[in-house]
Length: 352
Ligand code: NAP
Ligand code: ZN
Image (cartoon, rainbow, N blue to C red; front, top):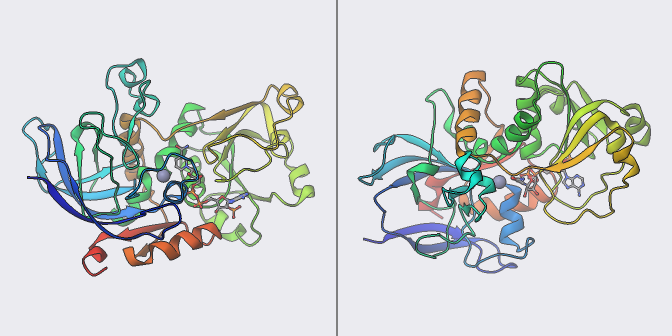
């Protein structure tokens, strides 16, 4: 039995997303079949739908912030049963035997993790399709448990925006006394503010948008720095142990580097591509600063993050949309008009 699926897809890099019917594989013995309830909208969905990373496969069904209910499990599935509320993030498989996978860092799988969409399944070589759809089939190893304490709609963005900010905050050992700055108040940025604050850090926001100050403070920032104001940038020199940079496009890192404290690190999570302009090494050497990158988080760490959020009462601030509004949502994200994550109510597929 091949599963017939309803979803929304991009058919080319210039086409708006539109209704699309496709099939998913017969469930394998270790698979969980999930009825999708909600799916968050990540800026990566725009990059991928529009082939901005030059590796897009069409038709493409985006979506990697998936919340749903288990409708079936294969005979080898452990830990999940029909009716469970679950999450799926950016990966659905990995080689399971390299050093990274052995450490639970499947996102750094040496053979390449299988992405939830715009990937190729490593067993049947068929393309993967994401969460802008009514059902998904995923190996139980890549399905996450959701605490009943989490609000389902606003938990969806934790599966990508949450883990992508949580993982570097943990890796660079953010805790009480840390001084952290987030660049960009969008989906990732607002989760970065909430999570760093919950870990005990003093958190600041760099934004190029005047008028985000009150919102940033509500979300956990104690300082807001307008990055276009050189006086405000100068006043921030030497402050931050960690800068988490969520900006999706090319931008100049050099103005931010002097705001690092000695040994401070500027972590890129937003931009995938060359730095232009280049980083001036004087700004690294002076102060022993680092520029680093970080990708999502492993499955065990994603579960840890979900449990941390449940314990601390953290979810995303979301604006619910119907799937028919997805193209408008993309345009609004490109104008930074998102507060702070769009989440699609997948019940709307029935009428779209
Ligand atoms: P988003 O919701 O659109 O937010 C991005 C924010 O960055 C904007 O709200 C804006 O904040 C700021 N910004 C946008 N364009 C800018 C520019 N040209 N210069 C300076 N600032 C700019 O995006 P998102 O969903 O958070 O995703 C952010 C990036 O992370 C995307 O590129 C996405 O692909 C990437 N990502 C990476 C990973 C990973 O594993 N590393 C995982 C998920 C997503 P202000 O108005 O406050 O300036
Ligand atoms: Zn994402």
